[in-house]
Image 1 (cartoon, helix red, strand yellow):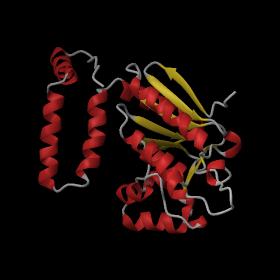
Image 2 (cartoon, rainbow, N blue to C red):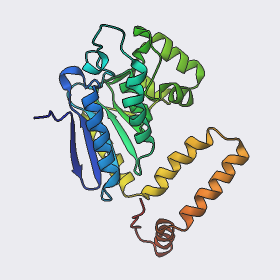
Image 3 (spheres, helix red, strand yellow):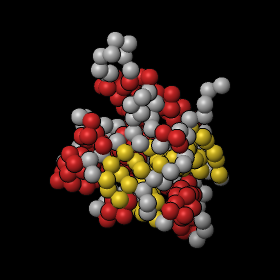
Image 4 (cartoon, rainbow, N blue to C red):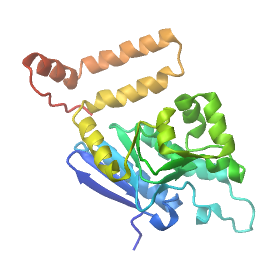
Length: 264
């Protein structure tokens, strides 16, 4: 039987996906990529799911690419085509996270290294245990940040810190990651999943379509001048203003009751 490399559970409107290769610190393999992408697609397609939490089994979140994965091997002993692995697995994964119709939270329970760190940073919000750490391990094996790292890092922490993290490959503790704005929140280890679930539950009760469009607007505006960003805001607000959730939110405000959002 095929091993369950990604575990999926649902609590209310929150889907939790757990990377499940604990003996290998949940490092990525081609097989795990396929299961993770399928699980994300399933969450995106299920209307009842309004927030997703991704975490890791055992003592680590994700140690990046498993260099012993058969997909990194070649029959004649030649160097593996790392670029092909990125195009086949990491690019679709990063793009799927950024196009999810609901918020995605990374609950980082231990080390997040290489592509594992950048996969977490690509999620909408990162909540990390105090003992967790982030490592841009690529320079130690002669590579550059991938899984969106070259795009994400300078936008999250600026060019100087991005280059420092990427070139040195030094371990960054979760508390420092929060201090410099790389992640949303650092919490005590014992409170990690409760904190992540509380945040996911809060977001699940909010207007999912507007939250997903907020992500898209912020990302798209980063490539625009001020006037273009204002025009984008007008277009997106126009569409959202015609949707159910705006009417429901306004009505609930006037009637002093809790809104019931349903757009996605």
